[in-house]
Length: 326
Image 1 (cartoon, rainbow, N blue to C red):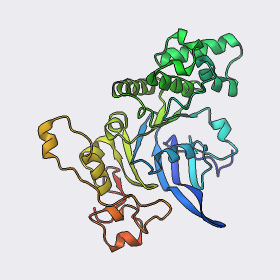
Image 2: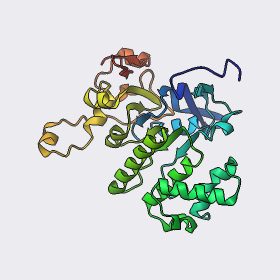
Image 3: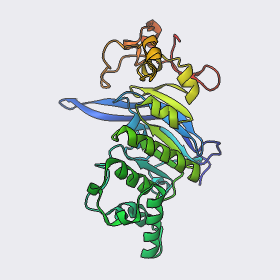
Image 4: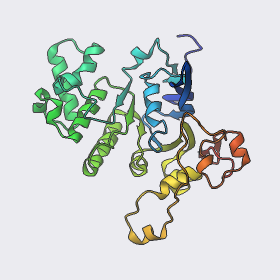
């Protein structure tokens, strides 16, 4: 391993200036880059959960997929365990990095039994010597995620949404990963099932020491499971802080708006709280405003906001905010 691709770090996952642009045809012989992820940087320690939140279309899922090279990164660097992730070493590193997909209905092969779905990563990475060893490992993984051994011979369509998501989680855990990208893993599930799956994620983290990038748009869910939270808007990170700190002292106008939309169970407090409604529409990612992408919907926007994107600056206690006026 050359010195250029290896470095010592306290972080398991280090992302520097990650970019993912998709070329979109906008006329004859003309393509315009759609900047789905534009200069995103963050770190995750071993055994830690970083929550990534933002509205639909802000680029959250693209961040997760780009990290695992399901999309080829346009720019930036991703270090895993001190090693620079490239096209050459991604296959070897996939054993340590896995993904749980959003939709348990479409992410499981309907022609494969549960045993074969969970056992597929074991086949790909040659992690068993005999069929009996493979079978035992699959049953062990099923027990870990709360599935019965008799489910092994059944097919994905025979299960409920929550059970299917458990199958997807067992498949991700099959190779003993150190890092899992959880792409909105509970958004397709009933609320009562969501709580069970979230609790299971926490128990697995305690048992196995796995780190999560937990992508979601539900701030309550993210606050519950995450140690730190990053807020994303139109391909850029606008705020990163500890979960409690972000919840109690949000700074960026977009984060304030997101938190004001979280339902409050106490009717008196709900009536007293003020909902911050954003004006205007989300700009097209093909025709991004200059400077700060949020300025077209921000009540605090000034001329400086139109000229230059504010950098993430530390406002104390590692509370990073990208805003000129807050």
